[in-house]
Image (tube, rainbow, N blue to C red; front, side, top):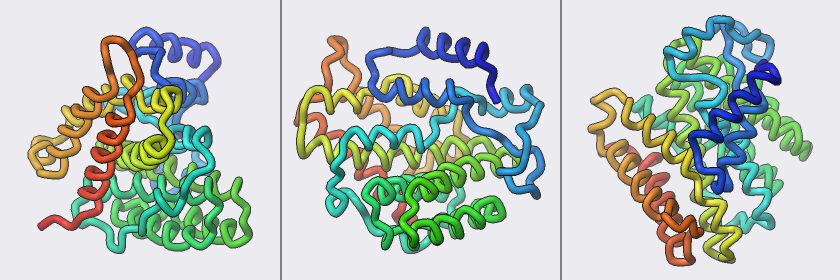
Length: 294
């Protein structure tokens, strides 16, 4: 776990590099101060019982550390400030099949975890079963099914009893354990893509809610310069084959367009028309993520 002194240093580092007027930057800072993700050293051992690896040099080389990958749980906690959530308007049917492409599957997995948090916030027990099964299916496709099996089972059990605090904890653990498995496989690219997929889905939901009841204060939640710059940078480091694929060309283009809509010289929040465009960008991106390649 990150020490208090290290946490303070991380917070100062982020404050120095990013615009403090971002509403969601505070969430990203919270992620750093909470110590980030724990990483499993043994791919055969459940991550919940595993101790973080002491090899900090490996983590740095892989580009994963306590203040790089935003936790989906922390990003989506912003949705609590937007309640009541019009669930029937912003929910979606869980993708029926897992994408065959591994990178696309990672984005889709993040979106499924985000859907889980949305169902928890709205307390929709009936939607947790397909979400839990989709999460397990996707994790198996990524090669980390052993890390997720117990979470998927617990999600179904706790949601049936409407133990929402426990369901949320299992979803948080599921994302962490996907990261653990990817770190064990030294596949940091997938870690970033899972986080990105969850972030896009969270943005789609948040912008839809704000579009329906726009105020400058609520729209300011969509101004996320640090997170946007982080993900744009991640897209620039993708394998060249991925960068040229239509899906990731679209994702990168939409990230840059989103930045133009939200990051302004006068630091004003998005207008009602701009929030509508933000929602369209996020929705288009998420639809492409779950679409089967032609």
